[in-house]
Amino acid sequence: MEEVPHDCPGVGSAQAGRGASCQGCPNQGLCASGAGAAPDPAIEEIKEKMKTVKHKILVLSGKGGVGKSTFSAHLAHGLAEDENTQVALLDIDICGPSIPKIMGLEGEQVHQSGSGWSPVFLEDNLGVMSVGFLLSSPDDAVIWRGPKKNGMIKQFLRDVDWGEVDYLIVDTPPGTSDEHLSAVQYLAAAHIDGAVIITTPQEVSLQDVRKEINFCHKVKLPIIGVVENMSGFICPKCQESQIFPPTTGGAEVMCQGLKVPLLGKVPLDPRIGKSCDKGQSFLVEAPDSPATLAYRSIIQRIQEFCSLRQPKGENLVGS
Image 1 (cartoon, rainbow, N blue to C red):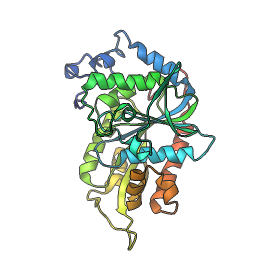
Image 2 (image 1 turned 30 degrees about the vertical axis):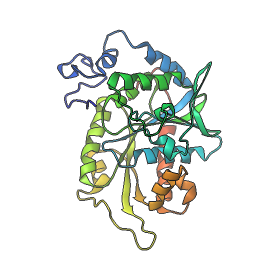
Image 3 (image 1 turned 60 degrees about the vertical axis):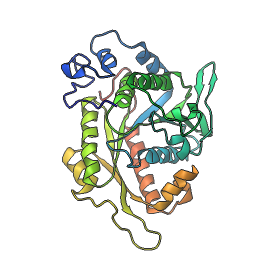
Image 4 (image 1 turned 90 degrees about the vertical axis):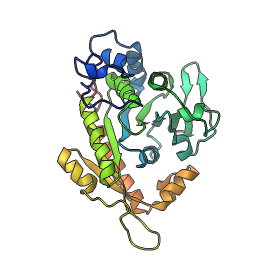
């Protein structure tokens, strides 16, 4: 999987897709479409499709294993607790689609209608789409190069019949690679509210999150804020302790230095993993857990951010 080169000109640059560092990048043609070349017609098609989606949120992480998909799932669960709020969860982690398991939807299949692919609905107001629904077995490996991944993401955004949706949450793989560039490019004209970036407290995770923040700046993707996951451990039998010590100050100090908001800190509760393995909402399973209270506070802050970023006609991402 190709990483974004450190000297990537950024998708908004006149050199996008044309610079020396763009050579060999799977997204070179897609980036060039925004810099004077013939645009990919899918961009306009997706813009039209997304007119029925009010808010679009990307969930990112620099490193794998920090709880990004768990957060995406519980963000969807939390928003969908309001029966009047329509929520869609799109899993574009092509090689590691864990959303079907976490949402309790393993074994479900996607159906096609005259208006496109139909999402798999967990509740009447919570629809889910993932490449995991297209595999014959959850153990099947997806061995695809960049262009095929990009094509799958394009199809998810253009051909899924989401209907009227208040929040589209896009769960991405870790890193700054093909899937992220494709999502940002294809959704650019449709207005992305911003990205929520997930980290854990230790420096080895923060190093990669700084790259993720840099990626957002380069592609002009607004940052809603950072969530520090696994921030302390809630032991059922004793007091809270640190599993991942914040040796350099954790996400709080990093956010202060980079001038990005810290949305909150979610402690590690063993029941979170159990809920995910059972495909159940931790917010419902453990309503009084400090982790649940942290989730709810973060979800509220994300809603407040989105309410201030209503779509502005033809404006592009970050404008």
